[in-house]
Length: 348
Image 1 (cartoon, rainbow, N blue to C red):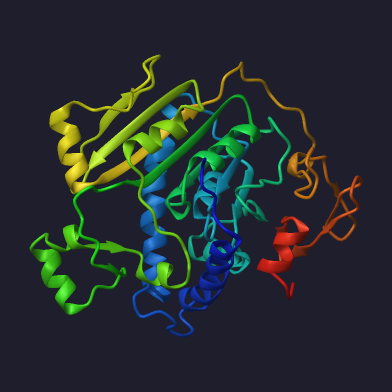
Image 2 (image 1 turned 60 degrees about the horizontal axis):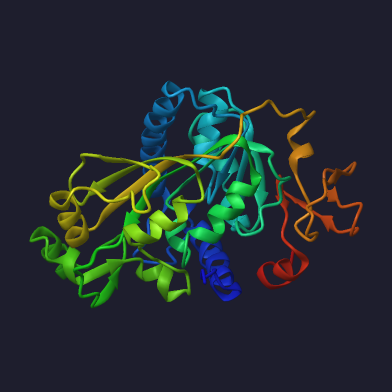
């Protein structure tokens, strides 16, 4: 049976990122091992540069980039890039309200004008109509879960027939690692010495601050990735071996085990670990969905059948079935189930 992220893990992530948002603004240092201020801005700029390459590649493959949904967005830089440089329109989503609210600041810092529609929600319970989004993407998000399979099932529900799910910058489990301790982005002096000799990669793992706050930092084996990706009939996966930049392409076939590089590549991948990304297409023929505004694609997270939501005069949302009311917080729509919102955001 697939594991799912616990409510305690979600609460830990919300609290951790709430404090980290203050550090990202450069106001104070909360976590010594995490970036802040100008350093974080440079990280965002570097991500935008990488995402530009990814999106150009997808566009060259005739994959439609909008309307779209970004999952695990952080400040939403991926969606901002699509809105402002690729003429696409859509949603950016994250579990952290405070991080999404930072999007206003980074919109200006990146010299962008158009903001995507921001949604604060749970990725296991996406507040969207079934078969409503033709392109869903995420970066560096799935490894915060105990198993990617349940979330990919939810993503597939939301995708239109023939729609695409794209993810990148996810880790592949390293078999040979003593896992003696967790390290942060900012390394201690002895960790820097160990990194210089490549020993650090075999005796410790990343994610200290996250794990200390009950945020999951996982890596998955190729078999776990394969099981999750088998939800989609068409998959083009690309693997990389740490620390090399070359790509190993693997396309899903009718074989039971298809995510299996040649032994001479698979062995160093297992020993050293690496990265994985993939373009996944849902079955069926693509078609243009009719809607007036993006709000027409939003659905009630409290109702099992996910009925469409109604926009109120003040910009909040209302479900006509269960009468649930969802608030707009500084430009971010809060779309959790009642139980989750009570736990994750008791004071909103």
